[in-house]
Length: 386
View 1 (cartoon, rainbow, N blue to C red):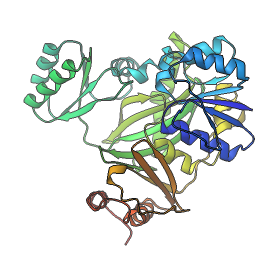
View 2 (view 1 turned 135 degrees about the vertical axis):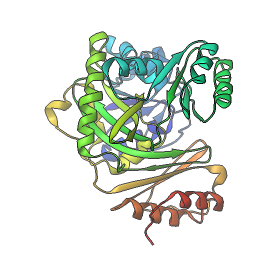
View 3 (view 1 turned 90 degrees about the vertical axis):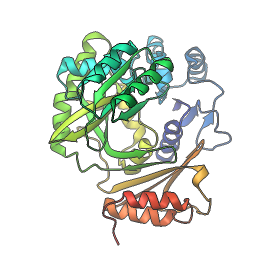
C-alpha cells in the first residue's frame, strides 16, 4: 500500500517512522522536504498547503491512503477536496475544525453547550477590552483568537500590564482577542481519536514549555478513568454532536487543554493534532498499530473493530531541548526514544513509575544538557527517586 503523509513538522516524521517500523511493506511519501535519503519514506517537493499539487500526486501515483498532520492543510480544506475526488484521507473537514483554530468560536461553543470553561470575554476593539479588565479579578489570561500561525497566551497580574498586553495584541494585527480568568492549576492535555460519532481516549499528559525546553509526562494524576468518562459525556460528545448538526462529522484527532480545580474540569482550548512532542510521548506508550487506528477512523470502521485503544501502563517522560543548550556528549541509548527536528532534540524514556522515569532520564542527560537547565529541571521535580 502507498501512503502519503501531509505535514512539515515533527509529528509527520515520527508518524512515518512509526508506520514503517510496524508495517515494513508500506511505501510512505511525506511532504517534509527536510528529509533526504531516508530509508523509511520518500520526501516530496510539494508544500503541505498545495492541495492541488497533492491531489495530482495522489492521482498519478496511485496513493491509497493520505494522513494529514498539518493544521495548514486542514484549514485549507484538504479533506473536502480529497473526499470530493473519492480518495481515502485521515483529516477532519475545515468547517468541522473551526473550534480548533478560533478561540472565540471554541468559547462560544462551550458557552452554548454548557461545557465548563473559565469566565471569558471576546473583543474586537481595544477600548472595549481595556474597559472590561478595569473591573475584573486578576490574574487573567489574554489570548489571540486565530491560532493557526501561533497560539499566543499570557498571564497578567495587574491592570496596567493587561492594558499593555491588549494594546500589543491589536498592534500585532489580531482582529479579536479572548480574555479569560486564570485558574491556578497545572495544564493537562487529553487527546482523543474520533470518527465523529465514537471517541477513544489516546493519552493524557502534562507539559511545561519555554524557549529552551519542553517537559512532557504521562499520565496526569488529575485524570482518572472516571474523569475521562465525565469529559467524554459532558464535553467531547456534546461538541461532536453540535459539529455534526452544522457540518460534516469531525473525524480525526481531537485534543483539549484543561485544568482541574476543586474537582471540576475547565476546558480552555481544542486542537486538531498533537502539540509539539506530545505525539512522541504518545507513540512511546502505544500498544496498537498506529496505521490501523488511523485507517479504521478514516473509513468509519473503528467502532466495529474495537472498544478502546491499548496503551502501556508504564509512564513516559520527555525532555525536548533547544540544541543551543546541548553539549552533544550523549551517545545513542537503546533505552531512549530520540528524535531531532529543526532546533530541537527530544528524549523520551519509559519506566514503571513517573518518578523513576524523571530521575533516570535526567541522570542520562546530565552529560549532554547545559548545567543551568539541569538545575532548573531538577528543581521542578517534587519527589524524585533517590
